[in-house]
Length: 354
Picture 1 (cartoon, helix red, strand yellow):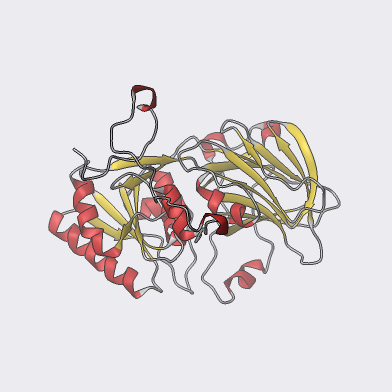
Picture 2 (tube, helix red, strand yellow):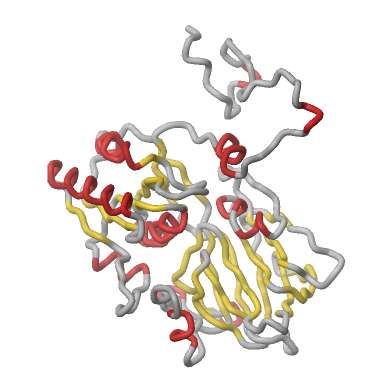
């Protein structure tokens, strides 16, 4: 593909990200490609819905994020509105999402412009709710203390806004997770959790979250959830500090919805999408979380080494009993795979093998 318009999402607090953004702008000038900063805000500005951001930016077909995973998530919410490609430039410390180091950003843009990249698709989540989401009066000022402005509550999708007892469809996507959590420190949230329309259990917990495979290494992992390959299609439900015996995650199929109803005796529950508070639910309210019809399209310059990155970023250590074992970092092989293995995702042959 040839790039027509680039939107850049920059972590302004990282000098390296700001410098890399200048490299992207100069590349766009040389290639006569449009370039616009997107999702830009200051302490005195109101942030906009993702659809409004994309329209104001002229509908870029490539989003370049310059920062860590948080910056990538900001770019992902924008790309989902326009089916744009996303390139993550790595300037973080514990990232799983970003693709290239800052020094290689110009090479990456050249490669994309020539159409010589792999495009990896990632499952995303969206949701319906019993009513449009909103924030209680005064909460916005609390959220802004010590940090930037919050995103606005998600808009209702006009093409499928109201469907009787199916609630309203919200124009929001999550690459990592959608979380329902308690607002009051001294009061847990009580929720009825339904999978595919069937009650799984009623939970009293600090939070419950619904994650994608991409998000399985984020909040869900911290809460004891499983690590799932981003190449898989699944939806993960994980309770956080539940007051009950059953405290395990449940991995559901990608076409199974997870519905969360705030019970009558519960306190209020906050709805967060990819770590951003987007609304507050009262007792009796509910949300339904399910796979979004669109998938995020992520630029990859080569095969993704998810498990190598998992070992490195999580600093996985080997069992002491294996300290003297002669083990290699990659499965040893020097010949092409046999026919019955040819359909599998396998590591490439070593470079010195003809």
